[in-house]
Image (cartoon, rainbow, N blue to C red; front, side, top):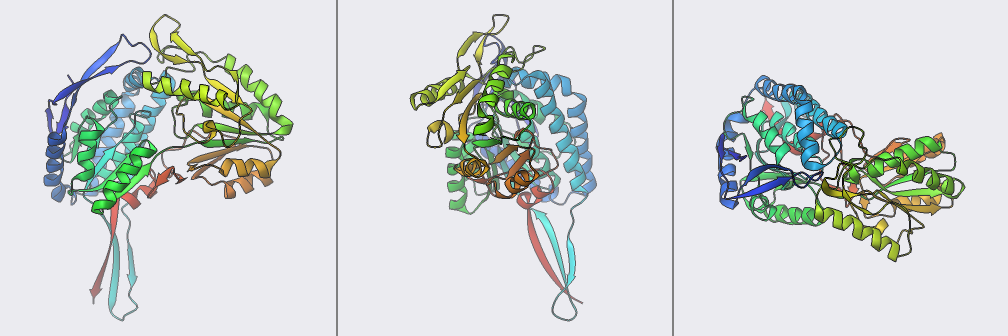
Amino acid sequence: MYKNLIGGEWRDGVAVSRNINPSDTRDLIGEYAQADAEQTRLAISAADAAFPAWSLSTPQQRFDILDAVGSEILARRAELGDLLAREEGKTLPEAIGEVVRAGNIFKFFAGEALRPGGELMPSVRPGVGVEITREPIGIVGLITPWNFPIAIPAWKIAPALAFGNCVVFKPAELVPGSAWALAEILSRAGLPAGVFNLVMGRGSEAGQTLLNDPRVAAISFTGSVPTGQKVAAACVARMAKFQLEMGGKNPMIVLDDADLGVAVNAAVNSGFFSTGQRCTASSRLIVTEGIHDRFVAAMVEKMKTLKIDDARKAGTDIGPVVDASQLGQDLDYVGIAQAEGGRLVQGGARVEHSGDGQPGFYMTPALITETTAAMRINREEVFGPVVSVMRAKNYEEALALANDSPFGLAAGIATTSLKHATHFKRHAQAGMVMVNLPTAGVDYHVPFGGRKGSSYGPREQGRHAAEFYTTVKTAYTQA
């Protein structure tokens, strides 16, 4: 039994959830305690009691703790990567890469604790000085998704602690293992009791309690658009600060002058790696007429070489979908696209077992051509290995199609034209733009976030994280 961490103590929950391996549904990873509303309030109380002292802790104290956490994560990358691949389904190399990213994030924000910054300037009034500083905002509720079960928690927890806040962390119900492992490392890193709390539980109980409690000064949420809208409404109602990272329907343009190999590799990586379960995945490929047929043919040939198998097996390219519900949604969207006129040219079928006969949530990655901007497959986020293709006459039409979306997280272009690449970087309606690269894959030290329905509030990661996790104070002194 893996317990919740509340006020520095490991506590049983009111119920238990079973963590199942999507690569082999016979494999039980563990049983994890579920916190209810009352236990979540206890965690908030513990954070509230710890905040006065922690908010005044020294930069060195915070550096030492976060640096130690980062070092342990990196030292245990193989072990933690294996756990992540086992519970979430991304391939072992991808899982280890995510663990390394989490370790680097903690080390980056350890350094940020020593670089708080600030400004001194004269007032317009003689003899008066002005000091501008940043202070922690208080208790931060962190609600994270299942698709990056250690990296996303890391990029929320690390800056929250680095800037002197206290944390109540509610991970996704599907992937409690990586969250618990991270919490266990934090519990031994020297944090005072109550500074960091883990409550594993249902969003309707633990999550809703975080949203409603007036002691929680801010909520950072990553997940679906409908839930993000509920988070926003609850926070606005009580004037709490909030940060949302939600969906994506990311375009990748392929122009006639593109290097075909570069374009195909970027599209396959963006659309299908991590089983397409990334908010930055390129699920809309917009291809100009002159290269369209060659590009689709090359995509199909590349997709035929992808090995679908147990996430932890050597040589696996695509692991399972995370659970039965997500698998059903992915397959449903393949059918919807076909019903609306799309042509399924590759994949899109359920695979009952892995290569060794293990029952799991497998499907062949799907490529659907002859789609239009009005189709649901190009408007709604599938969140699986399902990619659509649209034709465009030229760059101008391709750009218009790319921007014709309620989302605006990431956008990519494959081209050898400096003119078009430069224009696209400025005119793509997205928070992150990639040229001749996969749209998925952002460095840990740079800002992450989007526009329109994809994101709301200050950016995550890098130095920009201070915008959310601190508040600005202006102080005047008469000499």
